[in-house]
Amino acid sequence: MNLQDSFLNQVRRESGEVKILLTNGTELRGHVKGFDNFTVVLNSGGEQHLIYKHAIAQLVSKRTSSPRHAEEETSAEKPAERRGGQGKPAPKQKKESFNSMDFSSLNLKEQSEVKVPSE
Image (cartoon, rainbow, N blue to C red; front, side, top):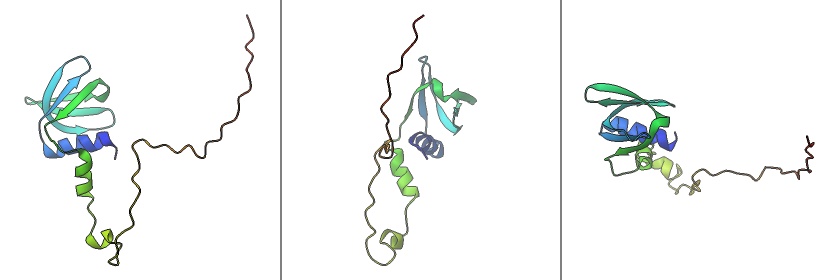
């Protein structure tokens, strides 16, 4: 689950009020009812608004903790799993950086000069 989906899922589950600022300056307040890859459904004043994500400039929640903490809380392991299953501490896993890309297997070839015919 990506950061955007995690954030939207958290505010949807908590049913807290959010403020959505659209790219045209319009401000909407309400509760996130649902979302998909392209849209967000917002309940506001007894009406449902279908908002295209590309029109959203900001989505503000009054919640203070980040979505990552909520995700970690929901994926809590059993104590035996955390300790490696045999009373030993589990090996530390290297944290992956945000948007990390591995270019180690990329093979770059020198490009020869391309001659463009004159008109």
